Amino acid sequence: MSYLRYVKVIGTMHVSPESRERVRKIILGEKPHAVAIELDRRRFYAIRNPQKMAFGDAMKYGRKGIIQYILTKVEEKLGEEFGMIPGGEMMEAINLAGLLGVPLYLIDEDINIITMKILKAPFREKLLLLLESLAVFIPLPLKREEKDIIMDFKVMMTQFKMRYPYLYRVLVEERNEIMARNLIAIVDSLKAKGIKKPKVIAVVGLGHKKGIERILNSHKAFISPR
Image 1 (tube, one colour):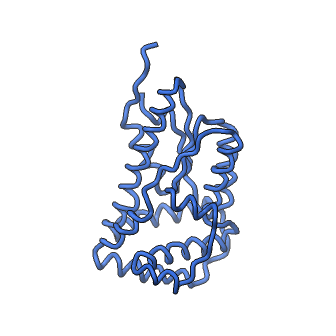
Image 2 (cartoon, one colour):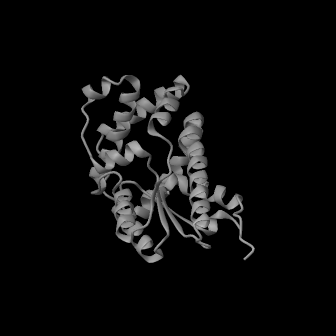
């Protein structure tokens, strides 16, 4: 029996109020034994203690700081357009885990490691990424329904994989592997505590959902003979 039997993966748009409501509805409805979210310790602390960083401050940390600054600004811009701060659905999952009294797990790769991998990208991909990041200063279209945004997102992910093969591998595929392994470890730990049929809710970005589910489905969980 695959690990996917024990894990329900919620794919969210990080800046969508509809995603936040879906996370709330599913977690309260499922009443899981554990909640897992697409964050590491540094981003978990940042989301709990939000602070604005000026570009001048980011420059003090060199290329790594500038890349993190650009990524933050992109999320902030999207949050303004959709009426939701970046990571609102993650905060919802964090709060609900506390409300239900179940363990909360941080399953994503360390942001510093991710940033260092980005810095090792081929020059062509880094240049394209920089140019496309400038779009953060351009007004976005009027608000749309989430289903329409998801359709555009699927096309965007396909295009991203074609234009940025290296970045797609390190930002999507490798993180899928890491998060899936962490979810497998969570299920195993719950089973070791005597929970025969553990139920884990994982809240991740929409671009990671299918990849994580595919990995979980390919791994078989140990079933007690009892």
